Image (cartoon, rainbow, N blue to C red; front, side, top):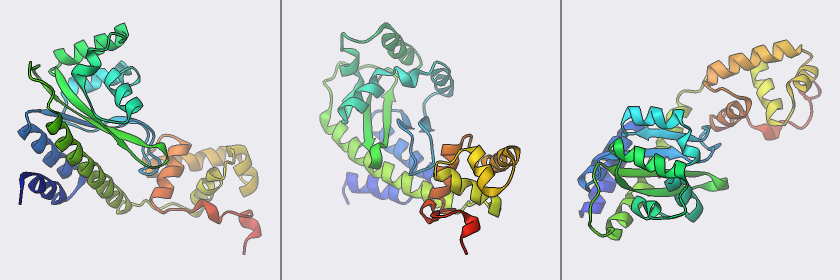
Length: 253
């Protein structure tokens, strides 16, 4: 078994998403990089998750907190580059771009001070426009030429990790299906059909405030913060199938 096969086998042997990420970090470290962050660059209805920086991360925690507080995901030039081009890139190539805004240059400088001096970023393109990505970094710059062979190897392994993580995350989520009441189920179904809370109340013959009560219960049980997130997560967990709504429940047998 060659080195690439051994790395794939290591990731494949993971028992859960967290372990898969730890194994991928070990592989990255053996390649000369010591930090990894795996993010969702767009909303991911297929996972029931919103746009999220650092779904899994070994970056310094204080940098991750600072990055989130500054909303740096919106101006990160590396993120914008891989999202626009749809292919991997070296950070040095992005920084060399003379068109970078002052804010983007400051972000890259502050990242360097946090120990993220150079790196490679990779996009992961999914169905229905979903885009994930990961970035690997190290705490020093080098004068060596960009290693495209290493980039290709890590891109391949990153793609395998990405698919493994997604599969395990979905399997793990389905094992944690919450119990919804019949009324909570109805509220979700009608919301999936695009009905407002006022319309849902009229259809179910309950008050607007009662609809809002059911939403609070749904948010708590699904561990979400909004209607769209609740609907997508309920669909992913096979808690409902919106297509079954063709007539109001009162008219169905």
